[in-house]
Image 1 (cartoon, rainbow, N blue to C red):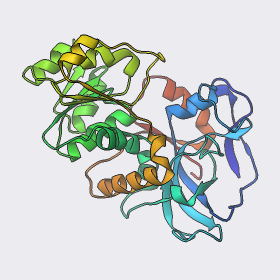
Image 2: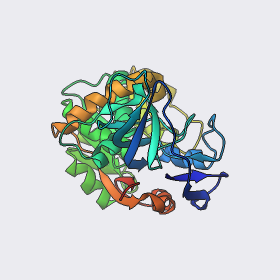
Image 3: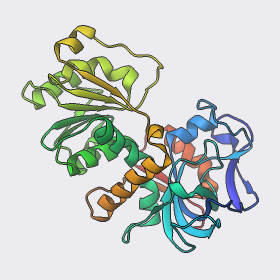
Length: 326
């Protein structure tokens, strides 16, 4: 089979499209013919060795995907050959999804509801469960609350916007430029704030009649945390999902104390494979009902993974999807 592998760490140029043996499933594994694999920032972190993994090069990249069950191990009972499934969580301690075939654990397999394409299912992948885990599991979002999504046009951000609205919240999103603003408002956000040209704190307070949002979903913690505390409502919560460019951040303690602020951190990996799959099933059903929809940007052949990583590093909107078989 064909796969995209790295033999050393580095830039997009280290991605190699090459022939590798088609894997055989173990007793509790599933072999999936991959029809769509998404490109995620974590894949870049693995490629650059900024996210140390148990498996050293050479290795196949890719964390999310969707396809058709080709073969199952003799202990697998939940799926059969021919079933349509999507999955997340590859490429760390295992080979990844940038390949014509991928091995997954039975616990990672999520059935694709009727009406969802492989591309849409793959694009639900990591972003929507991460957004759900942040908003619901950690943030306990409630209908009628106001949610501010910091970085609303990104993969997790756009998922967070849609999920919060589907769960009955009012949503404000921060964006960079008119194209992102159009995208986020098109997803249902009531208002957007351009963080390059507007004072986010002042504008968020203005949009909430001085009260501030009840919940902030923060995707760039090291940059935005001080502003989040200042714009937060009394008794509000900040869910920290994305580190941002620095491993450290600061917080205005006086403001946090004055507002009874709750600061919550999250890591989707703490949900474990079965927990992530359970969230993915719920999200997939919401997508099948038309309540949420992944934002698709580019669709490229698997052989053009290098270009996909170059696109990811620049200004782009929507998920980049690789198509191993067409």
